[in-house]
Length: 194
Length: 189
Picture (cartoon, helix red, strand yellow):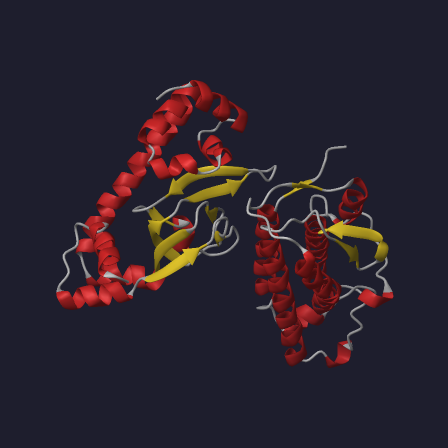
């Protein structure tokens, strides 16, 4: 891992201050994984082995509905965490798929090493508290948007806040995430400004 | 009749589920795995051996198909099974945990194990073959996701009366596996 990459990783844990020795150890816990476009990073039915920090690319997390259609639950992208987190923590087969929508480079840490961070450094609990709080608020916000906004409002709100790299993934994934048909998404894209 | 649309993700999810189930079976006592519920029935190990034989026929055909199949950049897409293939697949697929259309096994798919000499070593070997062969199937499904699957057909194990495009073949194999997982549940009671 080069210095720049390590700086990016450290910035993901701003609450944690490590000594030089601890930093060397911390760095060794992470490995770089690369994926081609459309690779399945995690398959439903398998146990998630890693917690990821995304360096490059966009990934979608989705579940298959009864008809076998993909229902997109979320995306990860440069600078964000990724993985089927429930499966990772519970060590149970994942219900969801994680797919690389663009060629992806990610830092990965195993379950045992992830747990060891909390055991060795109390500060990771502070990180965890803030991190999960942020995740929970994000999910609550999305739930409210899905249940209260019209398709057009959902489209506008999403396009205003989403990073540019997400705007170039196949439309069907964005449409599914916003709980609308690809045709509706396409129509909104051509006639709605945001 | 509704069309049968298959996707590689759905197939992978089902295959993982089956592999997890067989891993659980591996923890059972040899006596449970080798005792049939009645004289005419197979035991669990025989069912697995039958699945090994069946996939063993498809394995080289799939490998050969991949050598001729062009790559595409678009990623995996849905595939609509053709009518005759859909009918053949439906014949295998269990419905609500029940095996419909019970059929006699053709000689070439019979496990023919000597039940008296089914040692733990032999049982372990059958499980290992199951995992190796079905890891190959998983790899084949994954590989097919960026292949132009409409270019090559493969002949089914029962002969040229049924040919398959890859997604149809995978669906047939999965339904066949699911059918025999139901049978295993019946054997174990």
